Length: 114
Length: 116
Image 1 (tube, each protein chain N blue to C red):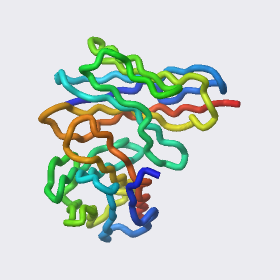
Image 2: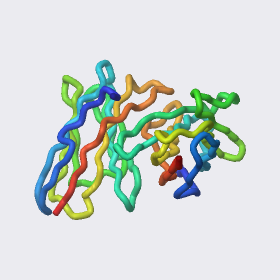
Image 3: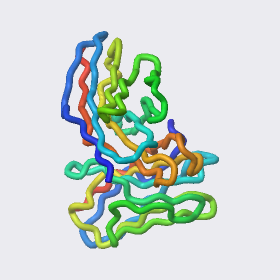
Image 4: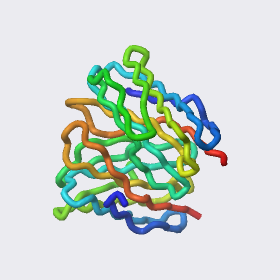
């Protein structure tokens, strides 16, 4: 158990819809990362938050947005969903922005778009 | 931009034998970190081992060790005494050092099957 909690584990929805994925980092971790794992693109970094502030952005679509709340949990919002958004979405957390801090991953949310 | 290449999409090994997974990367950075993550069928992402680029000594974690060749930009993973539980996807990952985002850049992965 990594200590990172993601909900829900599975999500099935239709094109055009909007969903919210939730992540609770390990106790004491201030940094949260979101990654997308798909068959064609592999594992890709989407966005990072540190202590409530956006820290870095990767290949995140404009239809996607995220935030980190004062209690440090994070949400990834996906809107106007397309078939290609079907993927496994991981959240990871680390202690802070310090170097050599391993990222601990949650079990992921499997998103299926019908 | 950094890239990570894993040239072996699939590998297999007999239980108790040794296997080496290859990883090469491309970067102009001098300070960075390298990782191997394991993803079993349960789909969890589990950190296996990590290496700081400024350290010449190769990292080891029990049956797992790396061969880090900085000049060649190579970072291979050796698994000794392979066990059935080692069956998984293995991802090599790169992270920039000081001043960079702490995001991980992953390779495409190597599917390892350990046969009884």
